[in-house]
Image (cartoon, rainbow, N blue to C red; front, side, top):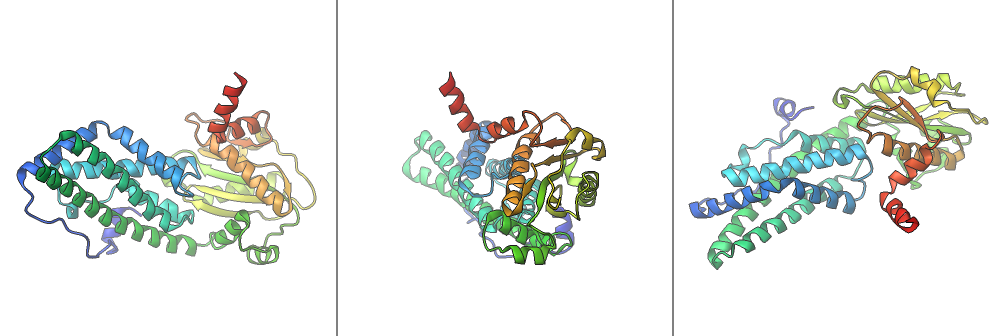
Length: 357
């Protein structure tokens, strides 16, 4: 749902927000605008610095390459807006949230990432941006009172904006979480995540709630819409997974859970046998614009997790590719495991290469 649709439906956040104090001197506004223009020239570097900080320091924000890209788009939108407000002295109450900021909050809700991570990200980003402003003010060597007035104006604008945008995106997050986890097909998401994380689960409870037997062989699948993800059809992805299950002669119905509007995780059941997975043979069965990765067959709870970890490792590489590759990629394909594992931990790979050289 777009921000416009939310406003039309009467669900735009309506709270008492922080307000800027009137009476700022024109010369103060001019200095603030000049500082904002100076930072705007190096905006790309600042956005990257904030994005790297958030992805590194806040758990679950770097779990997916596409999520990191959306995080950067959200940071860029928020930084641009703050700089625009400071440059042109625009009242915060006249703003509309950027599409990327709202979409990022929605994606976190769909993936059941804690709302605390969302709010913490905004405050960490605000802190780093304010340090950038402080450096610029200090470099001007303004007289004490004027330096204080400029710093106060920048601080007031940033605080007011963050107060406003966090209320907005938090409400968008809560609305989406209520909608998403109330939707059919996502009722078992928390149970599956608990099993994958090894917390608060039992095999009996899992099998009872999900209707899937863990004491057998599994092949994990990740399917996503590689083109035009905003118009992705989860039903199409679900049908694709079930078609692959039939092609591989699975012993039962796969479990499929949506991770966001363009991605599903799934597991195919094979009883006591280990299937042979031929990615090339499966590729013609995949619809245009859809990509699929598979883990190796694994048995029991350990195999359920390991196969999924392998699929996610391949996904972390293939989802970054700018050019379209094969529609289906398996962890067992020649060379895929090595490339995926090396690319998934670039720092360790670089250190290993340095040692060899």
